[in-house]
Length: 282
Image (cartoon, rainbow, N blue to C red):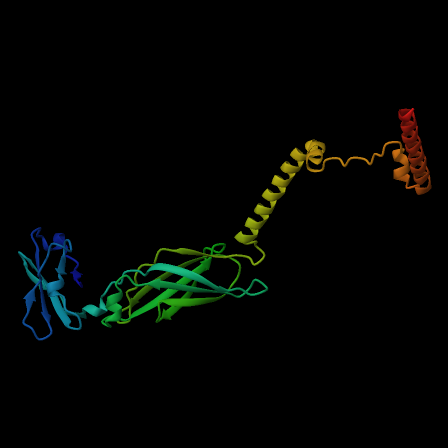
């Protein structure tokens, strides 16, 4: 809800010779009859506070202040105002940015900066129209602010930003007055170099290194036991062995000598068998 406060400068007590000076603020609202200030306390000394009950938008307030002392009364000039023209806007909040693109030569980066107004419903229903202002500077150039003025929308594209860091702030004011809000809390925009490896590449390099280390550990552990593992997985094949034949003949593949040995063995076997039979018959 809207409220507002008015202040005035007090009279110099030493010039008036009176320490007991009182003040009265009288105001009129549109064509209504004059009324006195509803609250002299909430706004502090020499002030008048208008609560939500006494605050009206799009109506003109006209007011003056009268000081009463022992030497007489003194009335200020009449001052008229519209509440919409004296609104002190809160600063924008939730300032964020999005990197839109980056060029091949690492120049001309585009950044979309966005922000929000704290009381958005006031803007949406149309009783207040805001104008924004954005400023930014390179972190390496703290005294070189660049300002974008008279912005109608709560966002802006910054073009041609080089690689590096930037500080950004925004503020706003009502279209009907020139009272700017405070600057928003600063945010830092970081534009990375296109040659900077990303997190995925770092992850792949790290994973590959770990796999190589594991394989080396396994290899160093297996090599000393290589003969045992080979004997277990690949048992020795028995050599060909025929009784009465030299294995070297089989290895050399000399078939004539092998056939000669087979003939000799066969003749010897037959002779032994016949001899045995004769002996048995006798």
